[in-house]
Image (tube, rainbow over the protein chains, first blue to last red):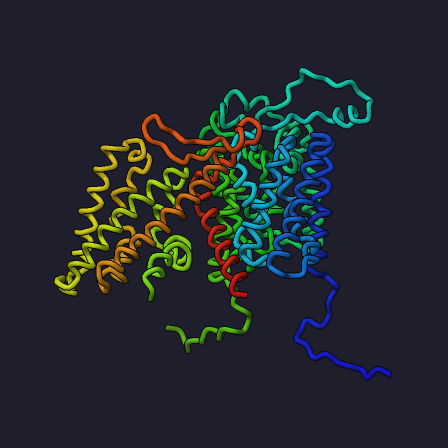
Length: 344
Length: 208
């Protein structure tokens, strides 16, 4: 009979079987509604981009692990797949395959493995790669195909005749507002932004509803906490409301700013990345407010129509500082204030 | 240390850009094309050669307390000469390198070699040191500029003087879009980082 062995270990002793891998795949699942909407909207191109970025990122991870003489099976831990999937969601459908290879390389090798792999990267790899691609290929990264509904899939299955002279690309709502606020504003329907099947944009950002469904599940599972998204969204709403009140003709209303662009995917899925976000509640709130503020500054007065990726990366840089200065004081660690005798 | 070793150290073992990490400012700023890197490297090489010779010759008569200002005066004189020479003979390169020519004065490679080597050695070893360091620097900048130019613009410019231009098209920008960021500042940092990683990788593989 085997001798019974006991392991001596620190708390916690009760464990629900959660692991980094399981969390990664859960986040992956919660992104599927948004991915499904974009496949409906952009057709097989969206599917191609998502599949390629995911597969290429896992491949790059395996390559890096082999080069560093680590166990290459670690590339299947879900983190590389999630990074690739998130990267794909931030890109326009219809982007060329070569750019996806560069993107996966930058995300996994430059932004993650060079710093020591999972848990050591100071900046969100998917966003680092997206910003790199935006500066590297400015034209391709701002060419947004118009969603065509089921047309693509019907053509693919031979159910519809290919239309040739449709408008194929168009500006995103944020770009249109930046270009000419007065002309663009009346044309933008809030429910279009919310359901997202008619607005151009990156693969993952078009449908606020689908993202909210995924985010709700993450919050329910307590994989993310409310602090960062709530702080970000509130800051954007307040900032948007203030500027709209000052000059309604020039600045769009706060609801537009909430539902347009990548704010939802950024606030719920990118800013809450465990590795690059602060740990403590107070730090998370400051971080979220910073993201919201920077996003609005870039959107309203910056050079780019959308600023969420830049905002999150900039706040990533502040994360170590926030972690150091916002440590909560544990209850009982400080002596109770001494009672001064009598009235003075 | 053998004379040959003095010369060859700068190319690999003590390469100023990849090992000593000196002179980062021109290394990162002007290597937007292979020829710009070459030009910057040659200008630095000339100044380094001159300053190493002069400083090793006069080191004995400079009081220790004012040696750094004295070195700077020597270096600044040489830089001004190179600056004017380049403005006269190759105005295109001069305008491409711009501010970074006068900035050779504060290039750490030159002051570093003056302080660490030329002031303590005789003239001949100082010349070999200047040539090795200068050529190593030039070679690194040339390759760095070449890689960045290929990735960021799809071309490689080997030589450019008035109408005589030696530029090759590596790939057509219509077929493959170049990675614009590589000829911007972030591209310089990323490329140099990969250069250093590659060098360390080769060194490790060799010693293992």
